[in-house]
Length: 367
Ligand code: NAD
Ligand code: GLY
Image (cartoon, rainbow, N blue to C red; front, side):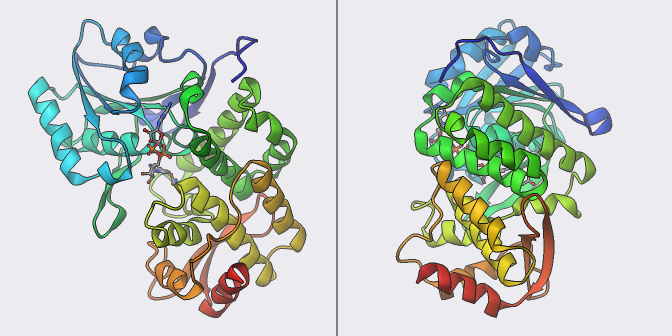
């Protein structure tokens, strides 16, 4: 990652009245302890991280916690550990610490850590503060912002959770230097998603800066993160609990979750599923006359330029994928409800989508 020219810290506010909070984006933020320490109100802190991230970055956070009663709770690495059992262990760690109502949970890691830590904070004494310190690109641009927290059940992903907003988000882009390439590119899919849903100008900017983003150049990377966060912050401020507009953030997710599940969460990363899913949603939109061939082609080119998969992995069949799509949380009363688009930057919620149309798109994509 190039860091030749020092970059200013970007601050984006998530405007939620008395629960508003800043998202800080830039280099050196974990070590900028004075900045984030001010968001801690009490004397107790529990850092929740995992066995991959803690050895890399816990030291920097520890410096900022000097003088407080604090401890850490480390998850094993992976989605399989985003469980109720681990929430129980995190709460036990808060009890051991003697955490009072003004205690703070610090989530240091990717979306798995952030979701579980946020949910633990929501549960302890019916809700204490937490700070998100996202260390993956996906968590910087998506999961750390907006207050969705939760864990998985054997019955499905993210079935249990709470809306619980953080006090601050500390997105230190220096941590991305150790992020594996595949995880980095999966995060770029969530950046494309924001542009595809609601910002055609940003989409064009991404088309122009794909090579720089692939090279992890600092200035374009900060700009991309900030623009996606700005977009998401606006949506969250208008529709915190997903009564309407926030559902648009799920563009590509109904197809994507089906693909992730069909691959038993080992074939595709979440962002990769979203990339393929967005393209399938674009193809379906085109089939329904909502958008043109040119829009689908632009999305296809951008995803490819950013090193993302665009084809359904071999071995996955249309009928089982459709069956998985029927289970999506957005569906109402047995009909498919999908996020589709009217071209770049114009997504919308469409109810009553016919299974025959979805099947036709899946069949064409698996031929
Ligand atoms: P992740 O948390 O599993 O992190 C991906 C991998 O990168 C892990 O192996 C992790 O240990 C490693 N890692 C993290 N930071 C690193 C670093 N700086 N250097 C080296 N390795 C590092 O996955 P993710 O993609 O960040 O998040 C996915 C999770 O986020 C899923 O559970 C998904 O459901 C959730 N999610 C939540 C929301 C929300 O709004 N709450 C939105 C999108 C996704
Ligand atoms: N990732 C979707 C949302 O935060 O609503």
